Length: 501
Ligand SMILES: [Zn+2]
Image (cartoon, rainbow, N blue to C red; front, side, top):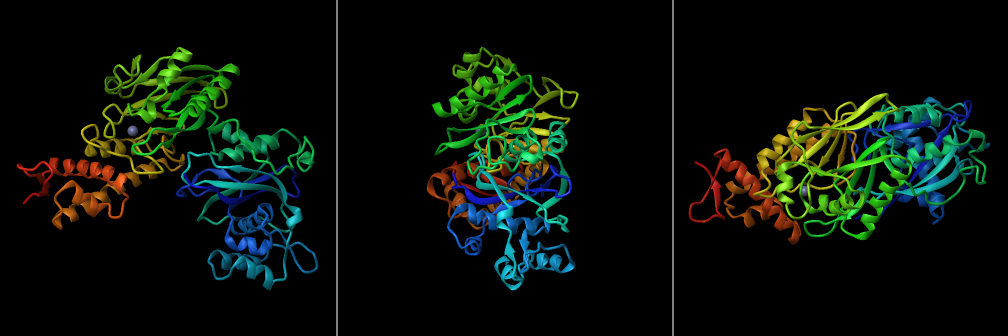
């Protein structure tokens, strides 16, 4: 688990149309919330502290926010030596390009032009720390600022897809209709802004927003009908973080409750209880497969709420005498989630049998929004373990390719951060396996023959506990190659493999 990196973000408000604020869409290929809408912003750079001439995190974040806003949108919150705000111009555009292409740095730009940062025009409204589910975590400080007169934001396709003005209500309407994805803290801020008129936003009272406190989200939502509770769950060597999903609106299911400790169980219980208190009905528990990190607390919630556990027959067999699976799900079975009043249509999950990681592995796909609850089909934080005899590599790759053909957009993995680039994540996973296979073939050609020697060669430098897992991946790779007639196992020694021919 990584320490959160300091970051800063600006809610840019239109000077002439109060209440209209600017959202940017992050590039789809970005690892962290690619494809999601957010406010312009980014990581604090070490030189930001020098420009701020302060160690105070808020002072440094002001510099980072101004710099990031300039880089991403071309809007510059600075004043010239006569205390006038800067106007958009070809010269300013050129300075931005020089900064983006690293021909100059922000400190020199400010100094050489005799500019002063308009720090007092930025209103600090709080900070937010990325939940544990993400391998990349940020502590982001948010500011409210009006765009200077004579400037227009312009987004370049690289880190961003596009930018759009709108009132909080307009942005939220698109989100509820599943037309856009919004990063969870930005969603919470839009809802907060939407509660009061723009004229009240800068009041430093209960009615306004101005505070320097941490926002704690009572719900982490990736769509109106997708809520995530990230918990610690058992891992192959150390505990890891898993995403437990509450899926649906008035009728909802829990996917993969695998909490390891009381803290996780409590977090899931709180999430269910608060939904039930609001009149939603908890319908049951869906399991993607039998591994403990996905099933650990399933009995607890099934008993407590008297709801069924649904899983594939092969998963039920693996869980025999441990978890009572009350209903079997087969390939293409549908799980109706009820009516979505925001889109006017029914939400339906379809289960797809996707073995390879585990024999009874299921994913759940919502076809209208092309949302894939991937279980352990792929992870965005690590490589999925394919360990024989339960794991079978050729079947696993077939399952990934099958789901890639559905062109999923939003992909919700059990491990790692959600991605709006679902198909890309699946294709990358297959590409990664192809690269490993090529490395394995090369190691065989270089006279490595045992699982240990092959793993040491293919996964060079991996620490010891992980090397044991690497040997399992190698074993899965060798079985695939032997089924294809490319590799043969020695008749005398089960741990001796060589190339055919
Ligand atoms: Zn698993």
